[in-house]
Image (cartoon, rainbow, N blue to C red; front, side):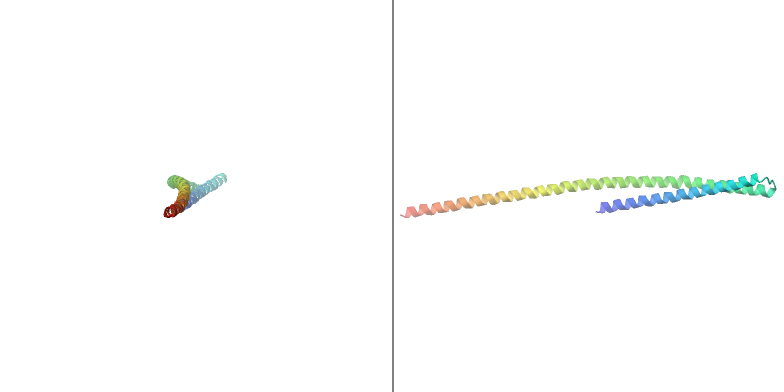
Length: 157
């Protein structure tokens, strides 16, 4: 039973790791989407034809912010993602090992239950055979006692 509980716990941990990984991917996608939108805004400003200092500064700010978001996305994409994947792999391996152990223990239990049933049947057969020998011995003893009584009765005559 404890092995089954451990297996269920590991499956839950795998699910949690997968949810955390999906949340991380969603966060990375969000950063990438924001960076694309900022680049789009910068492109619109460039297409507007305005070339004054303020517009060029705004375009540069948008591009810098987009680059920053790309950097954040790259940073989040590397280490946490790798850690999440490693954790998922490790938990899946542990769950697989646990599942194999549970299957092995179930087969051992089934074999032991069969051995117990076989031993019970053999013991019942031994008891039955002993009772039959006892019955035969009683029958022979009764016959011999009767024969002895008959012989003693003839000897008295």
